[in-house]
Image (cartoon, rainbow, N blue to C red):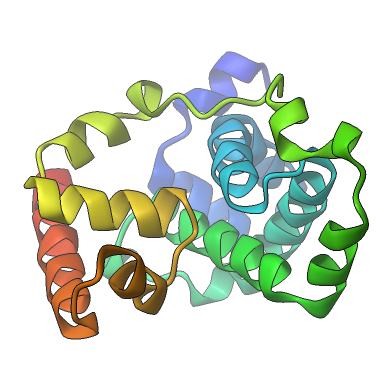
Length: 182
């Protein structure tokens, strides 16, 4: 199958093939979404080496848990983004990562590695336009949580607003975005 054919596979067909554990389906999934996932992971972990490890863990997790995907709860892309986000957040919270980040030299700092060949281009998949339709308060929270890796508690602390407010705005933003995608 050519790369162009890979991209033209419908999401429903891709999910079915993944659930049958077809290796070719995993290749299609990787071709369609790896750049976007890598960009999200990199924004959270801020290290190319760590991002590559988390990326591999993400695809293993997708492969092993595809049976849990439920199209009634959302699109495949949303589901895999959440897996990638959680994997990246778990990595930066791990003791191994915290100890390792203290020992890294300046040459391998995230600032010096901004030349990544993998770049999320939200315009290519329409996310930027959709998130741009949220009100400013909701947009800030969604950006912090889904693109910067903050938890709801961290968002509340950073923005100096109650956790309940963060949860309410997140829920409202997600409902709005789901409505736009429907």
